[in-house]
Image (cartoon, rainbow, N blue to C red; front, side, top):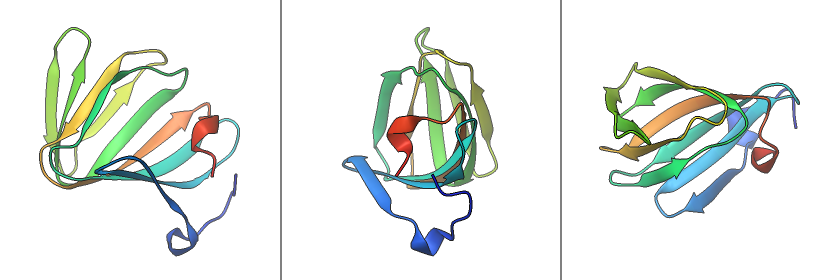
Length: 110
């Protein structure tokens, strides 16, 4: 993983329609990614070993957990999930957000 990268040199990866990710920088302990999601795109309930924090740069999103709790937030909204905490989200409008993971998620190392 590159420790220094200009976003214009970063590759965008699409996991599924309406969703794209750019891995910005990081090391084995911490990584930062930028995501774009089209309105209506949903990331289903999932979990991973990494702690996750995020910040919505633009747009409106809803985050949900396995208990059915929903947290809505737009531009300027931040959030955190513990390791193995089940969570998901849906883009209410087109969205751009940044997330950091610790430790780094190997599947996002591109």
